[in-house]
Image (cartoon, rainbow, N blue to C red):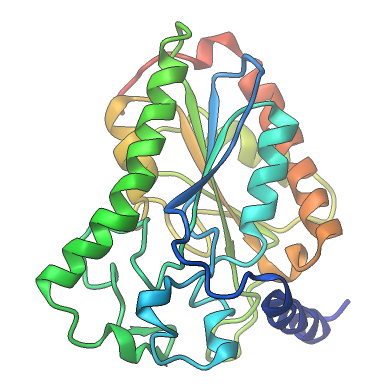
Length: 279
């Protein structure tokens, strides 16, 4: 299917989400979890899983279409993360609010943490956010999410092995200039190659896949969650970026959860992986 047609499908998918979101939830949770009864020493995280805005922030001055496009969340990433966690029989932690409220993959205080403009779209409700409001959002949304990740990693550590951490994101098929992005999936990593290198090799050997090594974004530039919870502690980690037109429906999400699981399973089967090693 041509990318233009896939973009139309993606747009319809984004707008269709309006039908399924609850009406003004009184207090959307800071995070969602997927539970596991398995023994896998792995945690899946999804930093941009939700497009939900808390009622007290209204619509942040955005049109409906903008509240459900890529500036608000990573379309398809949450469903891939849920399915991947179930496939690996491991827990997952997903954000419960839009990254326009506060971006859980940015250091609080970073200019992109509470953006007044994102991907060329103005966010009026974020203009002039003062220190008190920034701290309030961090206390309500950012820190509970990261505390939960830390708690889950601690629980896995107590099983006797250093756990692995896997991040799931998605990216737009085109950038705003109209340039098409050729990659189907990107593998993002910083210094620790233990998971990234074999996963890159496996995905690159799969016929028909265009795979990015730290493309379209680099894990050496924006990698707050994995650097903080995994890299700093020497835990093996890797993050995936999937092109959004490939995960615009349930079938696409299922397919990509299967692909990522197949790429990860031989890596995760190596008992030598589960040790702390700082690079």
